[in-house]
Length: 326
Image 1 (cartoon, one colour):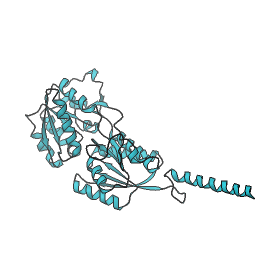
Image 2 (tube, one colour):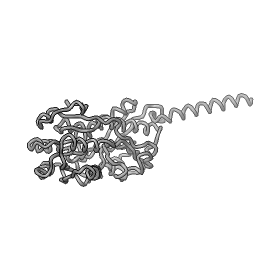
Image 3 (cartoon, rainbow, N blue to C red):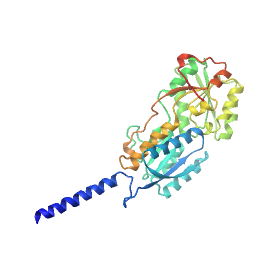
Image 4 (tube, rainbow, N blue to C red):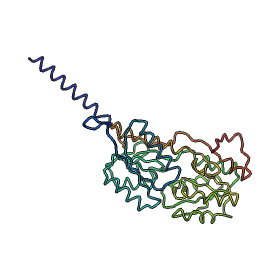
């Protein structure tokens, strides 16, 4: 009789372990059916780089076999709208928030300390107070940044050595922490290079052309960083730069395709995909945001726009080892 009860006990224990294992993958509901996750997406504005990051994020979840419904909300460059979007997503009790840009991540982090948040298109995650450190985020927020440690230094060296420029014009939204951090990094670096930055600040995309025009006669080059306000109106900067034969370096590949001279950068699709892989681990219960280190872009590539180089009468040198935009 005792042996029989032992057999029953072993069978019950085995069943319990099996059920527990099924519940740990994060992909099935309590009734055994595959779960569909609710993903809230907050994005500060629409432009090709951010859109590509979102596409990469979705593809990573799809490749992992995650079923998801996306609630996508765009703030159209309005910080107050971004705050409202974050509140709406928290009220909707989504399973995870994908925050695409620094302002979007900041408002999402302010709105909840419980719902997991995975960001991308953020330049300085620590400075934006999204995480305690890159290695140990420490809260409900983690993700991928759009800043490679060598990108700015390589760009400034190219501007000085290859373009012979000394005064770098930078158009940016000073209200974006992401942008302020990049401008300050450039200014600090140029102190050692006998070069200077001339700033032109904007508040909205409608200000971009006039701000760029205000730099004419004051600078001999332009550097357009990953500023969402300016990049969303990049054609305005391109037209002013072309009319005045000013070489314009940019910070990401889509801006090269749209008329920028060159960039040391990476594909936003890739950092979006990497953020999606982090989201998969969180949704499946394999990791928590606090334990997932913030990632930097995995590869830095030099890309150039041949048409823009030709318009500037710039000889393309073999030693640049440039890739060329389509």
